[in-house]
Image (cartoon, rainbow, N blue to C red; front, side, top):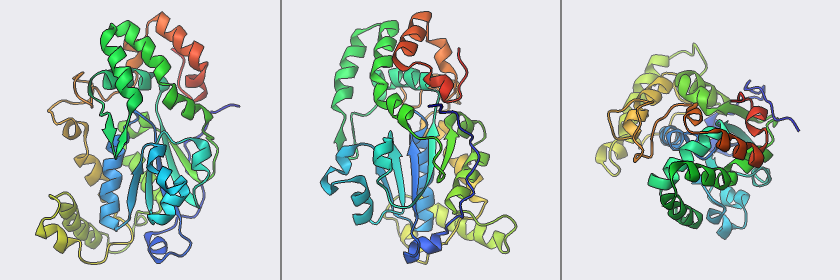
Length: 314
């Protein structure tokens, strides 16, 4: 089945935060990110927006997290989740969720391999959110014994855990806004505006009182970004949360959550630090590392996956 898709937004009506907070016509907001597709950056922006709006955001990176509940859907129900951030979700698990409005972000699978190689060899945490990634421990041990070329071949096979889920995802689901990471980082304001509009979380263009909302947002934003537990945070967030975000929030968010800030450095995208989790931050890097042998190995394992996802052959 062809997996070419158009990134156009769906025509579904946008639910507001008011409906969710009242429990009427509740629609779960879902962000489906893919491993090594700027998922940490995205979670930072989403977590901040959820804090501003008083939404309960839960991040799930592995089935072990919902195992005590019996299913992902039951975790959502019991924890009263408003915004669910997922990484590497499988289609069959996604389909168990209640009525939802979803953003799914993919990346050139060959770039996922290259980014994964350096991250898995050097920096990626083996524990997160109470989950231990045992496979990564063993994989890292192998990578550290291999030279770069052989390690990249090892990574091509290991990446099946992420890329096979991208291969089996249904890219024609009406409630899902399909995006590419490459679009996100090229024009973050435009793409994040589309994301929040898809979720129904932005004030409509030209709404009266925009400057008042923007001023209130800046006060709450300063509190959300402050250290947890400070009195200013408690005072600022004590009042009722806004129903939607002013449109001015998007540039404020993307200007704050940057590659430089996340990498704790003065580097810009394209400047390499192989021992930093945010190593390079630019698309198309696979061409710098894939030899003909790597290209052949990737195609033997995944076929024309990259082309079917809309990425050019190389």
